[in-house]
Image 1 (cartoon, rainbow, N blue to C red):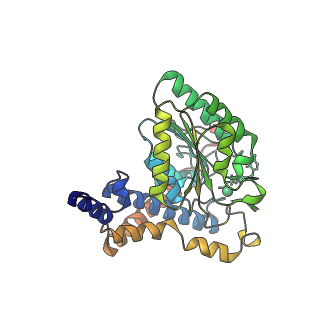
Image 2: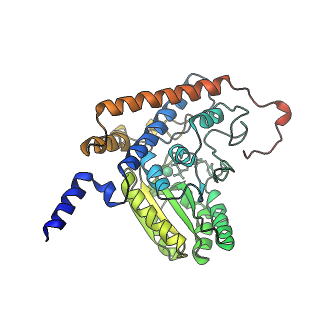
Image 3: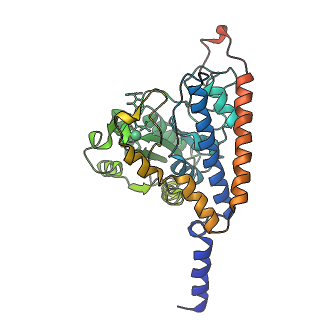
Length: 342
Ligand SMILES: Cc1ncc(C[n+]2csc(CCOP(=O)(O)OP(=O)(O)O)c2C)c(N)n1
Ligand SMILES: [Mg+2]
């Protein structure tokens, strides 16, 4: 090995895995910032629910690395997303703001997703190319294939990312959507956030194969399983899928294995079906402290930086909460208006 190679290897080691993937130090700091913002917003949403101010909360806590890693691999200016209800971090990367999310949580008229008519976490924005979603699990999957077909016919070069849980892959919609996209080689990425449960039903009662990615074989497309708590690995595999899609090589199925740290929703008690030891074991792999440790290890942030970021995020969450609390509710005469925002 030439000396130059050794220096190169040493540099790579010192600078960390993100550099090898083409991510800058600023990318990694920003990824952490969005993950932290998503987590703190989500925590506040539960507080608002538990204090009787928000009728419902559904959580993305634990899924942040999967969402941010995937979002980073796409082109926010041109691609489409079909998120599902856990994707707080994904839609923050895509341009929805903490105020937007709080306005929806509290059902206020200025909620950009639905004017306060939809349940919380039913994200949408025409302007940002975030397709509106139904509460019916899996319906977004064939719809995303349709958007990818439109992009292909129009030659826009746009890729569509559609997300869902592993439970959704037991729905007919999943199989129809993936089959159609595979046949027509559509530029769509099927991104499964596998957290091991569909409410109280464990994955082994949802799937007859070990991994969701195994389902790809039946459609002749690549299927990849990845550690969903590692944003860099998720970024790497989604980027490959994006390259395939843009090159006209068709869809991919990516399964990010992760865990929801809280109950299914504010109406669920997960202690009846998840052993506390299991939840605790996954807490040890929480993507947030994991990335914070990486930042420190590679000299991208120190304790004072992380503390300052916490403070900055807290201010954003406070601002969003106060803004939404003060905002007016929709007027009764607008009840039957459209549900999709601008
Ligand atoms: C067709 C349909 N069946 C059942 C439900 C009720 N439901 C809402 S979320 C959910 C669990 C979905 O699990 P998964 O796809 O793994 O996503 P996760 O919530 O675990 O992220 C169920 C059964 C629904 N909304 N739609
Ligand atoms: Mg699940």
